[in-house]
Length: 201
Image 1 (cartoon, rainbow, N blue to C red):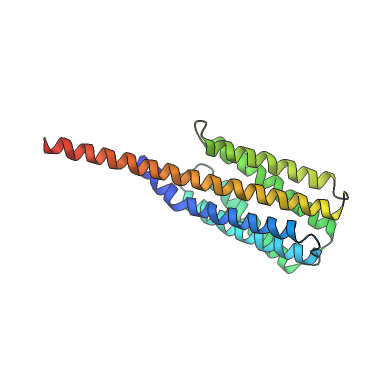
Image 2: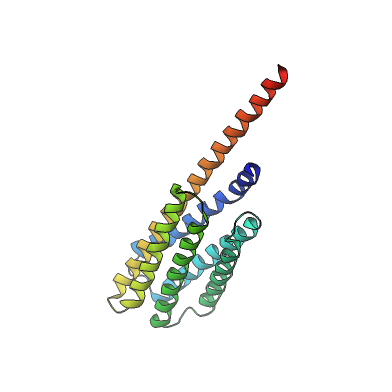
């Protein structure tokens, strides 16, 4: 069991780092380039969705037999890749359609994070990070849906702030996973050392 957890964490923690970096870069573009055109924002969102989709898909295949939520991650990853391809092929779509798509992505991502958090046993910090990220995703998506005409700048800021925050949370979660891996390694080393010591007696 311990070896399985160790293998799972070793394979996946760096994927969360990549996903977090992609979110942060997308958030920086949205926040620090407020004059960005709709076409440029759509293309940026397309690249972001495609990257995160690929990472989620890899994550899902790596999680088969190790995580109960692997199938949900696969569906989300394929959907995001499909969205990225659609946006790249249709960069001049209307602002109304773009708002609906972005809101949907945030809400679905939030539901996924909440669902994934529910599969963790215990009350570890990683579970709470995913749960908070999920709640924020749903709130951000509903805000974008509810107030689409509150101003183009407000819409972009909502996207940017959410991307920055969830990116930071994802990276924090990744390092927590790495910490778990290091602790497992130390436990295995102590166990092996104890067995060797008993063998010499």
